[in-house]
Image 1 (cartoon, rainbow, N blue to C red):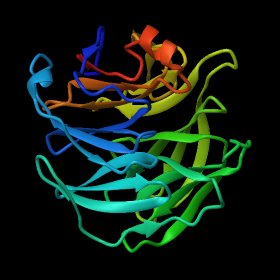
Image 2: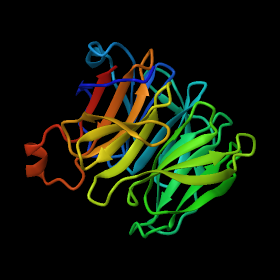
Image 3: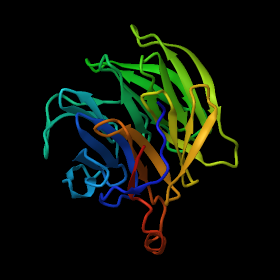
Image 4: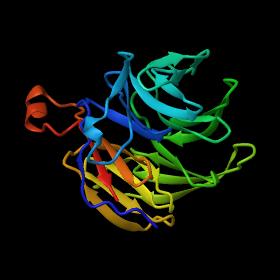
Length: 288
């Protein structure tokens, strides 16, 4: 049955400048403050119990755009332009293998990403001026080999697989597009790409994306204080109001995959604006 979310409450986490990359894996919620370079994680629980559960963190103090669980109590973290691999327990991260440096032009950066069941990391690159069509979608295998999976993106952002990993749903925020890439599950090659959702120019920016077990698509809409849901044909279903304008990403998860974790930001805020809008940069949770 598709998930239905009608209200949100505070997740009870530290306020972030740019909260991003929410993930659910192995009984834990994960997220980052991309701007401050902090990775956070917390065990899952009932929505009314979460605030009492401990939060652990690791500080990198440089831009950290992605935390991605990859199975067997391991995560990959994008620290500036490097992928670093860690093993985790309830309150610690230990680096376990050689990092992978992604060669990028000066001032380019990595952004959001995802892993597939073969262990490949898919991650986007972004140019410093967000020039139209200059960003790329990369695929990095477990041996550190880097392949350009697809060019032509302006601000490559959130990604989500369907259950069979035959389709990769992929956001280009500045073009206000959600792509659906058809992927060969054996080779990892992209066979075809089509625009699934195109938002109008006066709308917000699609940002993070997640699919529930029924295949419903959830998209964070940056600048509009909402999370929207769509069916697999790209038809609008519903809208969930968030008490912060800059909604950055979402993740379906929780112990029975019935919760929605929402991250927000306070990008570009002055101190006065930050004080005026204290919910900007907070994390929120919803229960279906």
